[in-house]
Length: 229
Image 1 (cartoon, rainbow, N blue to C red):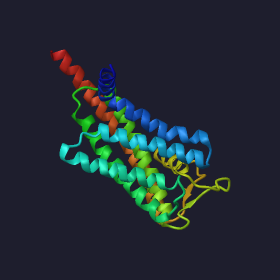
Image 2: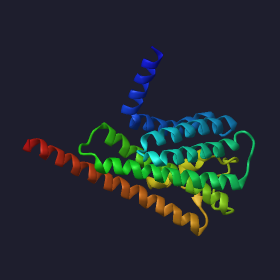
Image 3: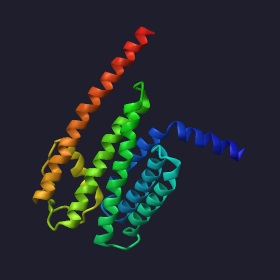
Image 4: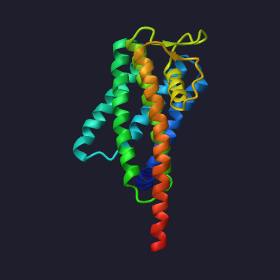
């Protein structure tokens, strides 16, 4: 009975892996914001990010020979992100951790984009994945901003009411920049972070334009194929 239920659960997770990844990304982006800027918010973020790491490896169609290496990398990242909540705070650990996060999600993005490009039809998985690529790009942008702030002193201007900087602040900055809203409460101060700002902005705008054109073109081709059949 238990084996049957586990098999059904595994089958459901496999069939809905893109949806679960999307929900994992949303939880990582949204949930920590409702727990303030203290330790609890940091722990919630680490928990949701850990789940996002795990689900990303499920979605990424990695060759069997590389799966062991990916698992080792994910476990290493999870250890690194848990060091700060348990009391081990180090700038060097933050730099390594953020570099790992950037590299890992770029790796995941490459698989998601490949999945979209190889899909013959525009179904719910393609639409969800297209949105998720944008959301993960925002996390990459936030990680790069946090990384820059960890390396360069005074890389960003923060408003006076933000006393303790957490990852959620950089997520906010990344998505505001990607969408070119630009509220101006968090601003880059040095050439390196100013360059990063316009690269994030350009990436966000180009992705939206390209993916919409791509999906519409694929959808029209799909309709033409049905008419021929």
